[in-house]
Image (cartoon, rainbow, N blue to C red; front, side, top):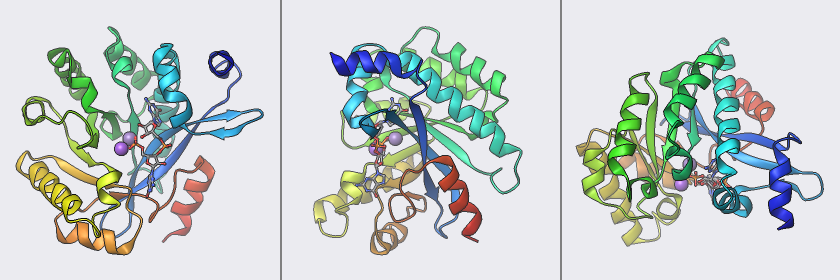
Length: 254
Ligand code: G
Ligand code: G
Ligand code: MN
Ligand code: NA
């Protein structure tokens, strides 16, 4: 209960932060980032989402906090669009199913895009399979409305949920994100290698982009590249980090 009350105060106290994790191409060039929510607690320090996301969801605080995340990410996107060194970056934002199911979700995103002036085609929304368990047609309709502006969609944590090939074909997705639990064992485990391989093939046959998450070593990248996956995210390229650290990394890399 104490944590819940503190979460209720966190927005007013300006304790939310976004960290950014690089997403790179096969040459290691950063092509985008994933925005990841952090809570800067006055006593606990920096708190990661595994501690609080489920509480945000069960209290519906996920909606105002999710609005803050989208607004902050889009403001950053608009700012990067004006700087040649960062203009090509896309920003991926996690959207929980509850947030997506708000009646006015599409209108909210449209208003944020307009207010911030963010380039719509650089915004990628990461959704999970849980979104499609119920109200799949509603989800599809909302996605199509946002896609008219150029907003893109990634399916996060692919393979860990209620994967059904039916919804993959039915939904207007742009990218599959192979979950880190498979990628981390891709060298050691034949089963995980088979899952990753078939996911890459599936993405290709559905004309979806594919990104591997949780890439931690050169050997994993080499394996992924040789199996046709050319976009990566993981500690090999950088942890989630504050804005200043990301900008420093990107400007000193080349
Ligand atoms: O950054 P970290 O790996 O600790 O994040 C753990 C999980 O928390 C992520 O996989 C993601 O699903 C979730 N998460 C991170 N940031 C956000 C956010 O802004 N909104 C939502 N809904 N989930 C997030
Ligand atoms: O939204 P999603 O669950 O995909 O968020 C990605 C999470 O994975 C973030 O919490 C991030 O901190 C974590 N992560 C990113 N790269 C790596 C990695 O290389 N190894 C591990 N263990 N975790 C990672
Ligand atoms: Mn994600
Ligand atoms: Na994931």
